[in-house]
Length: 156
Image 1 (cartoon, rainbow, N blue to C red):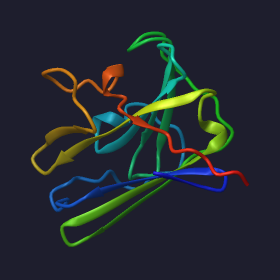
Image 2 (cartoon, rainbow, N blue to C red):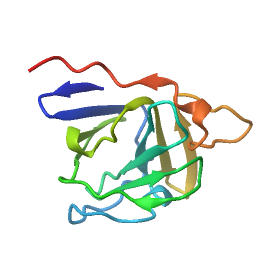
Image 3 (cartoon, rainbow, N blue to C red):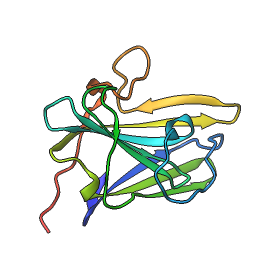
Image 4 (cartoon, rainbow, N blue to C red):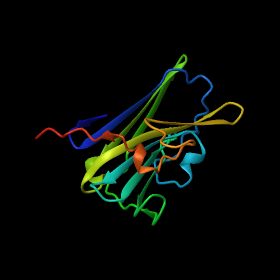
């Protein structure tokens, strides 16, 4: 994760992606339900409160952004100025997924973050990956899983 001018770029690396089912390319637009297929996610807490924003990025090029008032409460679609750019690259067993997010899309007071992924493999095998799983089962919305911090931006 790093800043590049007015964009926050995320890179997810999969070392064994040979069986991962990648959604077909689609027009770059907002789409609901991306988590039901292979997708990558970033959860961003708004300062010290319970509010957070969920970003979903699909290898198809589709994306979604939602604001929550508390864990799994008050969900509403976030209005943003520009869509993220998503790129999937695979070769052999390895794959990379890059998402570039315009700074303007980030919530004010953005601080702690959680990075996660839903992987769907051949045979409809679904797995849930994150920097941290706090409980016995994966819950990406659990604030205890927001264990990373946004990197500091360098002055222009």
